[in-house]
Image 1 (tube, rainbow, N blue to C red):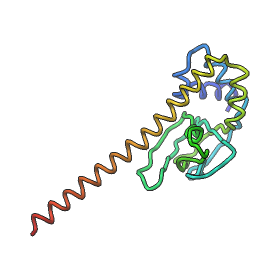
Image 2 (image 1 turned 60 degrees about the horizontal axis):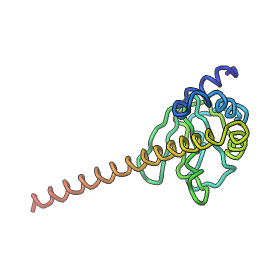
Image 3 (image 1 turned 180 degrees about the horizontal axis):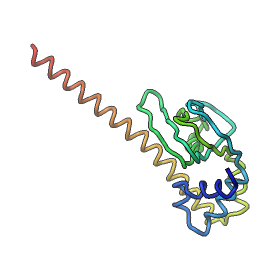
Length: 172
């Protein structure tokens, strides 16, 4: 993929739409500078729940991933998307979920430390605060997606158990 095409894909990430226009180009370039493109195949893992790694972030440019948290129902995220941001908000910096490619995909891998260092160099303090807020909102949304799915599972399981109990009472 050509540099121009990579840049266009980066700028199409939903997170980028939350960034003011005046920052988007610089932020897109920062992602390009700190990232290494990798074509990945279906079934490959980006992260393992509980894993401690080199503080790796990813931009899924093409393809889809499955995110699994414990025994809960997995969610699917299609590219383009930022991945790996939730680790930034855990006290022990452990991965909060397993992320596996559902399809082949193009991923830009980067180290968060490098991304933060370049952001500090090329963004104003106010822009850095905006970026932090947007990434925090992105992580919060992902937490809610996992949590809401968990709540739905619990409700469905509770209803099924109630129905089963009602059926047993009716038989008695």
